[in-house]
Length: 434
Image (cartoon, rainbow, N blue to C red; front, side, top):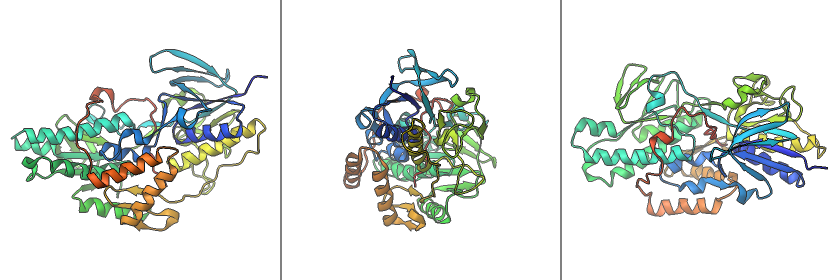
């Protein structure tokens, strides 16, 4: 008899941990992980890559190195036939291929959530993957250096102004890390010592970290304001131009940097599957099986998973849920082959951690409010535990940065046209950990 094959599309939190769980339970089966890169990206630490705190290799965990018994199929799935149990993919060099499967797990993640705002797709910088983080780091560094080049006061002020749209988890951390990064860079340029660096964080919500607990919101708000960040709630961008943005209150802000952290939406591949959806996410049952599709499973950002802890609602798009759903999906797929018993997904919120850069964080582990250095210790400890690899290297990088400071240089590895904001390539969403 042939070995059963399970195809897992996407190696984000859900897909990676599902593959690990399933292979552990069914070592004689073929588990094929379809992903455009050969690594699992630990997204919660991406702001530290953009801020020059961590090397990008620290947040990229090798799939062949940590899941050696799982087959990595390097490529992007572009179509799936559930009836024929077959998918097609395109590898990084443009070659097409097919893969048959007995079971399939959809964990394709999500893509940038764009709004119909003039100029945003052209001038804003996204923040979803390694390429965008590296480009943003280079861009910010370049603005500081070009500000030092010019004697035009208006141009200098514009280059030293940074606008972040979206005060959720991603935007808050990017802003907090960005302020410290630019502060460090400016110290290297004496000519800029009398010119203020301006950071604006705008969001249509009534507060930063809307939807999280009061402790997290208040700690983040206080920390950002103490660092000089201008927080504009109830406000968004109405128009983006090459050298300025117009806010929804008609304020014109001269700037060369617009960072887009508004949110995410499910990856468009699922639209052609013919499955019922809720808010663009595939409807699944409590066992993470797609409704009306035997042998088809989905979890993570792409799935509308019923939240048994909040009847009538679906689980939010967080790494905490995606990781645990992946483990449960792996076990339930094994159960569909007769290995063990399937169980419903149920997970209570364990709290969240928000890294605010420097020695400051906000956290509520098990709903115990922490801030400052204790929260920082919990935050970094949590990330080291949650990472499936690179723990020692990451810890050493943190110690090195604390002892010697961050390096402020441009690498020039990623060009602007290589990271368009309106791309629909599924690269994984920035997700809060808890």
